[in-house]
Structures are given as structure tokens and as C-alpha cells.
Length: 457
Image (cartoon, rainbow, N blue to C red; front, side, top):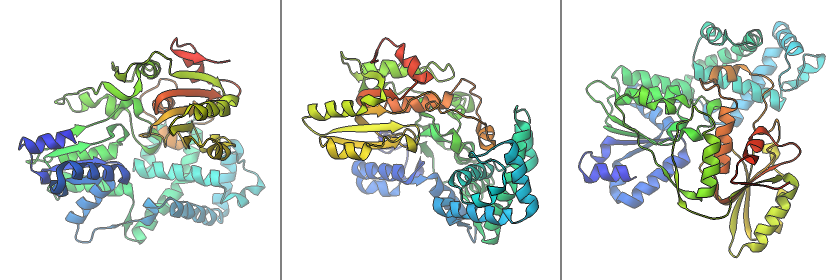
């Protein structure tokens, strides 16, 4: 917001030369609201778009009959329904059904084995979720079958991954046919088509200053679109990105932390400035969380300072059976309503008594969410639940096709999970409790060794 004001006040830019890009509708709306509060009517001329809206705008301006975005690309329930119908139809052909049976008899998926009961599993939520993940990754990759095989050839489980590809490729082909038959596109093809239009100068960009928020979430195809807008011949624009490699947690959707950590190499004429003060949490929580995230040497090294200095330690490790007691203590001490976030690695980690606690502890504003969903949120207190061995960091039995296609160059153990745990800890403004049920995970054991962490047996 300050940069937009500076560009306008110094007459370096006209409002219609500025583009702000956000990842989601909520973030874009927040930007729009802030601009209106700061600039009034002038804000109307500044472009504030999601990547989705940006891709559509480019295509609308460059195609006589712009393709429609498939509702399946934006409505997850419709896409799930489509996958179920596809699988039912696919399994009606005996050779297809036998291929799945043969694969599952060697390599189970979603706990399913290739027995005779497989036919009744076409609506199994875990199997469909797995199929959707593979489909999403094949769409995002945009490669042909041979190119994918070349990409995974060095994987130790190549034969299993190649077999998974054989199972899922017909689904991908059916998806592409569905789009073609309906004269529709999906999100990925919308972004890549928009990039082609910009690169071939069919779209003339009006923007001289492009800014991307939450840059650490960017994927290669989105970055290609931004770069094509910045580097358009005769119409170059400057790129200003705000991001934090410590909070890069969306590898499963195609984002790549390397795009942030190697920003300087990708844009050699860039200058990098560290936002080195946190206003959310104290120096005690800062010390523990910064040491934890920087244990991975591939993360960028940063000396962060806190606006708040406190005497008491702000990170506590204790047993999960004490969560109710923690909430009871917070509730009895609260003179005004205090916010508490319970965070779990997965939805199923939500404590069974959560709804009861909400009713009982009336001085607390109590929420449960997954660590992924908590990004960007904050609360007075955070309680991380079920940080047990095999739960957080999540244990992967198998690397599936989608994992192999999104694996980055960072080989440090549990690199993405470490960033996720860091995000969870740093949602707290005052104090964070890390709890486990039976056996503490490697992350918890690591915290137990830190001199600024209170460990309660």
C-alpha cells in the first residue's frame, strides 16, 4: 500500500499503470478495501486482480470468442462428482478394471487392495481424493506422457509410479476431451494460454508496475505469466514481490520454494530488502521459531527483530491430555475475550471435545483449523495438537505420482513440513503450546532441547 502511494505521489506512475496481483479473492478484496481507504476514488483506476481474473482478462481482450472457464475448474464438489462418474465408466471395461486390480494387488492406494470387492469402491472418498490429486498434477504439469516418464525415471519407485501414470492418464485424457467438447478451459490452460498471448504481443500490457503479494506461493506457470507481462518488448514493467520463503507451504499445489529462495538469480538486476521486524509475537517466541526454521540451511538466513520484549518463555511442550486444563486456565484468567487457535496437521486431529469446550469456555474465542488453513491468521494463544510421531511431520508411506512431479530441489528432511510447523507456531501473539498424545514427533523432540522452551512432563 505504501509503495502504491509513493508511486502516485512522486508521479512515477498513473493509477492505470499499476497492477496488484493476489492469489485468492479474499486477499484481492482486502487489497481493494485498503486502497479505497487510503486513496478514495483514485483506487478505482488501479487494477487489483487474482491470477484467475488476470488470465481471463488477457484472454477476453485477445480472443474473438474467449473460451469459458469450466465450472469443474472452480467448483471442487463438481470436479469430485466428475471423477466418480469417470471411474465408474472406466471400470466397466474389463481390461481397465483388471489393470487397477493388478496395480492394487502389488501397491495399495488409500488402503485399498486389488481384491474382488474393488468394484464397490468407485465412490470411496480416499480413492477419489487420490485420483483428483493425480489429475490436478497432470493438468498443472501440462506435459505429455513420455515427458512425464522422463521426469520420474530416476525415482527409486519408478515401476510403481509409471504404473500409477498408466492408471491416471486415461482420466487426464477424458478431462481434456471434456473441455474440448464443451469449448471450455481449466485454470492451468487459462494461465498458459494467457502467457502465450502476452509473449506473442497479442495482448499489450497497460501496466508499468506489477506487484505480487504472498510471492512464496507462486507456481512456475503463474510466474511465467508475470514475467511475460514484465518483459514484453517495448513495454517493460518493474516487478515488486512480497514473500517469505519460511512460509512456503503449498508445494502440493505446484508452488516451488526455489522461486523465492533463488529470486536474486532469476532476476539478476533485482534488489532484495528484508522486512526484519515482527509486530505479532515477542522476542521469546521469535527466538524459538527462527532457530527452528533455520535448522534447514536452504532457507534464507534472516535476523528478525521483535517489537515486543518479554521476560517469560512463550513456547511450552506438554502432553495432549492437558489441553482442557490449559483452556480452563486461560478462560479463568481472561478479563476480556481472548482468542485461541487449536491447530492440527489434518482435519481429523480436531479434538473430540472441541464443541463442548466452545460452550464451556465463554471468555475464549475458540477456533480449530488445519495448519495450512491458518496461514495469514493470528490469535492471542495457539495450541498445536497431535504433534506425534508419524502425525506431524506427516509420515509418507509412499511417494505418489503427484509427489514425484512436485518434488523441489530441497532435500532437507521434512523441509515443507518444517515450514508448516513454523507457520503454525507463529500464529500466536502471546504463547504457543505444542502438545502430543503418546510419542513426541522429531519436531517436538527438537523443541524440547531448546533452552527457551518450557517442557512439562
